[in-house]
Image 1 (tube, rainbow, N blue to C red):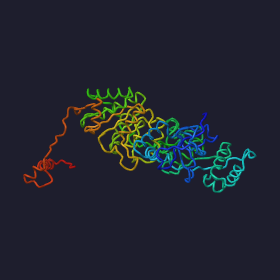
Image 2 (image 1 turned 135 degrees about the horizontal axis):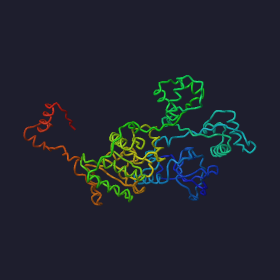
Image 3 (image 1 turned 90 degrees about the horizontal axis):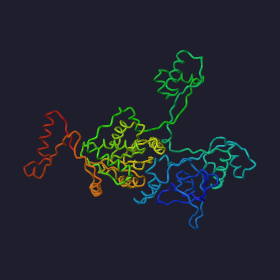
Image 4 (image 1 turned 180 degrees about the vertical axis):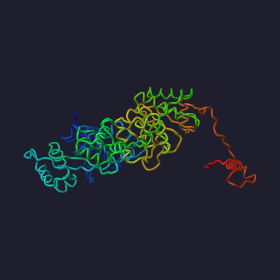
Length: 505
């Protein structure tokens, strides 16, 4: 890629810097590789070397600034795109906190973890063209064949960081050394599982081992090793023997850790026929998706009126248009219940869960597949509003009146509903708020914008549970000193006599 800009504007992994970016010179060796969103390492004051993200480029810096060079690219694949960074910057400005804090809240810690740069000797070719520093590095690495961290190398060869990284980049480009990144966060390493596949044909096999090879071929020539051993009643020793003959091959593959996989065997459910009111609500939601109208719609339905079924149909409409969906619930347990229902309609492979209770490894894997567009539906608590899902077409916030959508501590202190509206405006998505008892602010706004979608009746015309309001002042005046009203006592006695159960809140 041709790069005409002289400076890269980066966001550094240093707190309390608000939304500031810093300009760094781009070394010639990485001109063709550098692009927005990729992680890099840069020198930063007395902190030494820090992680950073490339946010943009420029040809000019304010007068008086003596720019330093970027040391190295950590990953050629962008972690953040410009539109996503702009959203996070808006959040930082709106909620008065620094951008670094928002980034840490939005992305998995493993993607912003400290990284070890490890170098290893490969070859001393073109030795006559090397500088004094390059030769010094090569001589040390050649004598110490094992890999060594860059900061340890710097201490050994006693070369300042700037010329050290210049030499390392040139030696890497020339093929003299290899440079690898190792994430220090152990729990976010890729999950690897062993697989088995067919190899070369052989006539020198017992009938039993021939049967094992034929069984492997019947699976398509490849299977997960543990499942294959169990299904075909064989042993690891037998597989190892077959691998030694080259008849089969055992290898490792990275496996996607999706917390929604617990629902992969859930029985698939058909879509239900909608009532007339539900169809009207769905038509309005579909219209907002078609027109890319971000004005929030309020699905105002009594308990049992079928709001979730409207959500499911709306998600199907979004997916039919090639769009993805974010579905928020106020609590983790509700998010998990919704994930089960959505998996039963759309398949677990299209659904992912995002909240604080999933492991760092699962969060890391879900993040990677969101960026590639493999996941179409993300379901979670308030932090899922930051999920970098591609082609966003619909945001649904269930039980929107709940206080769980506001984060009060730690920073950033945000309201997921506000961010949902802002994100919808930026990405041309529709927003649906659902509740039986909507927030007064939400209801007022929806009423004034004619965005209320009413579901006033329960499915099947079932009545709501009866509610009695008792004035305890009257109870006290009539001699009842208990915290329980007489009506409640009588109701409880009836429940006990009928051998049933009661719940008091």
